[in-house]
Length: 272
Image 1 (spheres, rainbow, N blue to C red):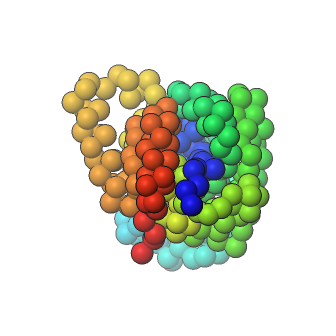
Image 2 (cartoon, rainbow, N blue to C red):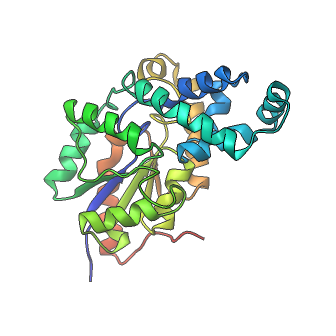
């Protein structure tokens, strides 16, 4: 029997807020610099979407960064070092998110349109609960309050596992998984949705893949915009997305398309 979509689960930075996903970047760079290791914004972006402990670990495992750490500290970076970095990072990122609270243009209109159709709104993120507590209060003041909010340390594993999605299904009371859409700007976030057997929609322009604030994006010429769009769209489709859009402002036609596919008996592709 055909069941239409029941819920959409959004990522946070780069998807609903913080066009360009800039809040964590400065914190990562500042964090490593304070420990004698210079990293670039590009290096900080590579593991985006993972839980922040895993993200820091992944940065320190990049060959150039690993070598720089060993030079600065006389030994390879250990899990104990990551624990120390993570403890320092959390308050830095919690402060940084307050400087990047801008909602992605069209986000509130899209959420309102989804609610008008009776869909529930969930959210998952690579942020931990301490950062989320700051973010959720500030986002509510700006008009965005999802029905559920789960962070990377709320369950035994974060992305790319589906555990935050499973918890979201339970809290929202939605099933089967094919009646849920996951919207995210990162490969681990898309993997999370695929592992949960949801439809997945990648956002290319507003997220980590391009990494530009909205005014910076608008200032680019059309050819440069097209090059960025093409590159990130290819990356997201390679990650298994069912659809890729510029930003959440473009989501509603995809919702219509998915409902039509559900009515025709189609289901999202399961994770490998």
